[in-house]
Amino acid sequence: MDLNSYLKEKENIINKALDSLLPKEDEFPQKLHKAMRYSVFAGGKRIRPILCLASAEIFEGVSNNIINVACAIEMVHTYSLIHDDLPAIDNDDLRRGIPTNHKVFGEAMAILAGDALLTKAFQIISQKSEGRVGFAHHQPSTLLQIVYEIAEAAGSTGMVGGQVVDIESEGKEVAFPLLEYIHIHKTGELILASCRAGAIMANGDDKSLDAVTKYGEAIGLAFQITDDLLDIEGNREETGKAVGGDVKKGKATYPSVLGIDESKKRAQELAGIAVASLNDFGRKAEPLREIARYLVKRRR
Amino acid sequence: MDLNSYLKEKENIINKALDSLLPKEDEFPQKLHKAMRYSVFAGGKRIRPILCLASAEIFEGVSNNIINVACAIEMVHTYSLIHDDLPAIDNDDLRRGIPTNHKVFGEAMAILAGDALLTKAFQIISQKSEGRVGFAHHQPSTLLQIVYEIAEAAGSTGMVGGQVVDIESEGKEVAFPLLEYIHIHKTGELILASCRAGAIMANGDDKSLDAVTKYGEAIGLAFQITDDLLDIEGNREETGKAVGGDVKKGKATYPSVLGIDESKKRAQELAGIAVASLNDFGRKAEPLREIARYLVKRRR
Image (cartoon, rainbow over all chains, first blue to last red):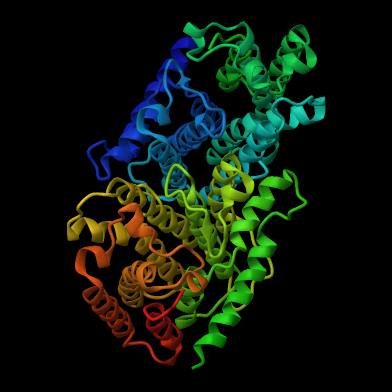
């Protein structure tokens, strides 16, 4: 399969849906909606929503409801970036090659735009939707489970928890178990939830869901290890952010704890585990397999 | 009826439930969970969750699920206070007589504790609950509607939108329609959602829900007008925050636009509208009526 055209096709679907789901820039209060849209359309790779759609494709395929859920996850991801970049947290001026939200709209607006995106995500999952494509209406119980899984993945024992420990560990010697905690929670949980959400929405059975869960856990961690490596070996033109930021901030990273070679080996191993976990699925899982291989060799 | 003992009884129910729903202080990451609990247990009046329970009591009464929803709303309210108090937004050092979250835990933790509380709210509404009391299991579709209504009330065209316009209007001459927009959105929407959530969870019919909606709209606005008045006429011992803060910040308030007497008159009128909207209900709506009267004469 041609992964690049697959990713491009899904990216277009996601971007179009995000555009229609978010309040327009001329809707009051305009500055808030501009700030929300600015970061959502700031050139993200859409990895999480694409994983959601690719996971759904193993089973019943993609419906409008699933696209909505995928977009909701991207909004949660975007909110987390806006808040992480704030002066009080990571204090980053540049993200994906352009100024961060608070550099353009000010701190107050960035905080509130993040809040509004997180809130919007749950509104979208729970809203009544029309014009479903592909297959029957989703049960409210399924959508409620999605709300639960995303909230759990994003909350104090998930993504936010990982972010807190990440900040608290800055400048400190961090042992491997704590490093793994940070990576699994800060990044892994929402990637895992993206994969699971697609499979749950497309009515994957329990055994299949276990396989997708193994896949999601492996690539979630592999993704963050690769991010760590890009912060050392990447270049600013490709990654769109200042390189070496982790070292400067004294962040706990895989390369800083395990070394560069061992980190690369670990990322490759995890991609292998991810691919192997999909052995029971046929051709329909090929996009997920290709994405796993791509995620550990990407340059941005 | 004795409103004080009613409020006290409900407050105890809410506090107990909040304590069991929130992660414990010794759960990892401890500092985050301490920060979340600090603001949730910082002496709030629990008006929103009490309104939720009182609205449910008109119909089928209160169940564990409804208490969970009431607590979720209080978490949304608490997150909004933590973020509003931040240096980049209202820059308040004192809330309910004690230091604000960021003064105790630092800005980064306050931002993330707010994020985690908002996220937790949606997790609680969507979680599977056991040991229900009072009446049958709630339909997932009902809970999904609650997720939707709270998200809508709290989002960019609700509470966050109101907060944005409030900030943008600081130090400016504000016409009455914009002032009303700020108050209805910043404060009114979540109070309205609290009332509606209780009625929806307790299976109120459409006509009754309309009446509760009228009630919620009226007291939501009356509540914020009274807040504005307390900022002028209250005292620090009773309100637990510095008095005169609105004037100092150049905030758009009812007294600054309409004058003190007219604002008082308007708050009383709204309380009257709220009480009148419950005419079709009998004794079971008495707590809601009493709360409306109380909200415009409270001293904190």
